[in-house]
Length: 144
Length: 140
Image (cartoon, rainbow over all chains, first blue to last red; front, side, top):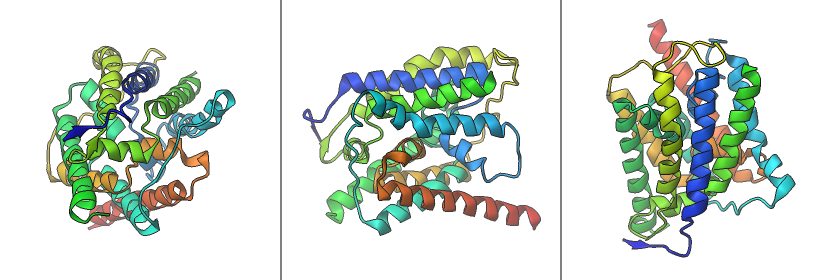
C-alpha cells in the first residue's frame, strides 16, 4: 500500500463529513428519521405511503444541492470509470444489494454507526470488504 | 415544519457529499483501491460525519418523539443474518465497480453526465426487482 498524497484532501473530507453528520442529526432530531438514502429511495416503491412527503423532500434537497452549489462556485470534478455495461451492472447490484441489506453508506455507515448498532457495523464491514475486493479484482487481477 | 427540516437536511447532506469528494466516483475508487495509490480521504469523511452525528443519535435514542413532536422511527431490527450480509456484499461489489453509492448518485443526478442517469435507472430497477421478489415471497 502506498498513500496517494497528491489526491489526499483531509480538510475538505472532514468538513464535508461534518456537514453530512449535521444533516443526519437534523433529520433524526427534527423528523425522527434515519437519513439512509437507499431506504428513502426504496420507499418510493413501497406500498406504504407513510411519511412520503418528508422522504421525498429530503431527496429533493439532495437532488438540488449541486444547483445551489453552482450559484457560488464551480462543481467539483466528476470522473467516471467503465463503460455502459459495467455502470448498469453496478447500479443493479447497488439497488438490489442495498434493499436486501437494508442500508448503504449513509444508513448503515453514517447513521447506524452513530447509533452504535452492531447490525449496521456488520453491514458496513461487509460492504467495505466487498468494495475493496471488487476494486482489487477489477484493477489488479483483470487490469481494467 | 417537518417538510422544511427534511428539505434542509437533504440539501446540507448533498452539499456535504460534494465538498467531501464523495460525489466523484474516481475519488471513491481511489479510496477503495488499497493495493494501488491509496487515497484515505473517505475514511475522514466517515470520521467527520460520525463525530458530528454521534450526539444527535445518542439524544434521539432516548426520545419517543422528535423535537417537532413526530414519532421517533429508529430501526428496531437487531439480527445479523444472511440477508443483511449477502445484500451488503452485493452492494459493496457494485460500489467497487462504479464508485457510486445511492447518496452521491442522487446528489450528482442533475449534473448532466449520462453515466449517472444510467446508474440511477439501473439502481431503481434493482430496487423495484427487490420489491417484486418480496411480494412474490409474501404471496406464497
